[in-house]
Image (cartoon, rainbow, N blue to C red):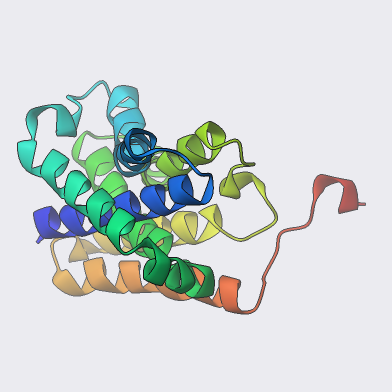
Length: 201
């Protein structure tokens, strides 16, 4: 189950990366590079912080999934672009999957509770952060738009369930992901925003 979810997240983020690259008029090689960074960047940073083996470096299947996602994003970019504008669906699916996988990996390596939750957020959002920086955009995580908070709250939801004795249950996994997807989708639909620093009094 976890392996399947990992592939879903990689596929979704690779599409997101390719669409962003297309919007910035990058060439095909640039598109694939951005797709790889978007899909694998957050997990790489997480693994380096944990002093663990970087997962994709020994997994041909992960690389093939990213290539497949990037290719789908390139071929069907015109149709997919309208879906992404509507609900940011690819980023949303990606962050929901990688938040939980990041929390799980932190817990498996005996990280502190708050550290495990932040590792989930890093796994979910830092690939997109690198994508936006390389595409000369202000990273979404730094804007007013609600992006990282669903990851932090969803990761906390999973962590609480884990320590309540439900860590190996499918319902906790799916309900945590559903929470993140629902929160993020509602934030997009209703334009929920965080206040800017200059607006704080």
